[in-house]
Image 1: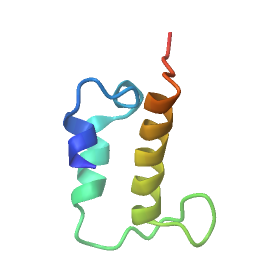
Image 2 (image 1 turned 60 degrees about the vertical axis):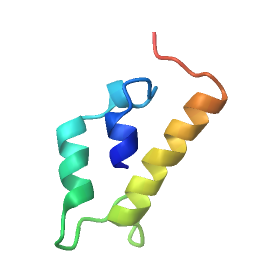
Image 3 (image 1 turned 30 degrees about the horizontal axis):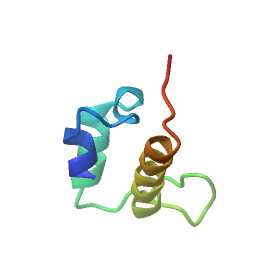
Length: 64
């Protein structure tokens, strides 16, 4: 996740609140708010963001 946040060429980066996502990625305590259902927590959210970045790169998605 840190690599994605540092990569200025990431198509996802402009859509993120980089300081907030960085803080979330570095948290030691449990992320107790459910994200998209009861079973998804911080690891799943971060994995989802990485997958969206990969998808945007693969299909050359750009935000106009």
